Length: 373
Image (cartoon, rainbow, N blue to C red; front, side, top):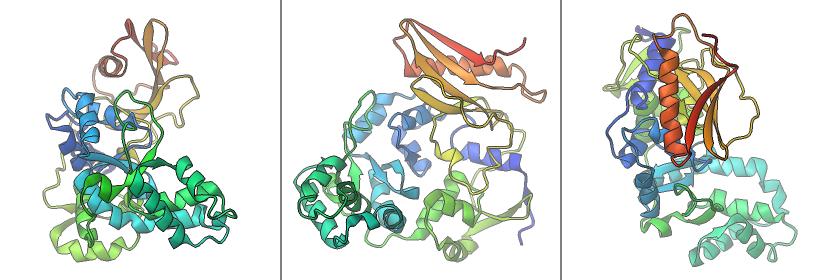
């Protein structure tokens, strides 16, 4: 067993350093997307908020241009969820996550095909997508007459889960609203997916972005099984540690591991951010210091607030006639918080409002319930 033990706080600082959350980085948006090994993106605005919290002077039109120019794409990949990844990573990751997508389809949709042969359904759907990108509703309508006993949505799901596809603009562009429309990955990118990608490369990318981490952590992030054997093949190239509960953790040799007392400024994360979704053991971020599920309120976004590196509150933005308000839900100051923590939260919150609602006449940050001074 490895000898070095890493505390939850040490793991927290290692995670934040790799995720660009200890300090903003002057990096191109595409470089940060690849550094993060992809970004959770089922809510199209989420990657923009996530990059704003990580990239110095982030300009959302930069990411929009990457999506328009087909250098970044939205596709079902890790955990069978929509991720924003570089075009290069899409070609590598789809073959590795194909089994995850197939299992999700079997569990949720296969029984609803009414006996329609899956391979024939997928082949027919691929022919349709080769003509032009289509929504799932359009795929369902076109395929249903051929297989009248099938549930039409299941026919569309078979195509999008079981063939290499991605979502095309305008969905995913900054400020745009559009239905999810699917295209063939190879046709959209003008290049084939990797025929034999190595799972070793995927695991190394995961550890560089989220390590030190266990095999179970890597499986939670990707949804891919059988990673124990992959990690064992990589073991000579990895560093090994233990957490405080004795679980074995692995890391790339050059992965940053800052001191546990390294300052961590407040950061606003979107509702779905892989920093909080990519470990089986989430105590490195969720240490019981936050309020739990967000309260239902009207507004355009709900996210999580990190204070001193850990989840401490929820947040939401609402736009009124003349003002945009950022509500911070149930933040509770602690004696050990850094000096002027509330002021730092308000400053960061005002920056977020300026990013999300730049044309509002006024911006306001409020705490619910109100903080005692």
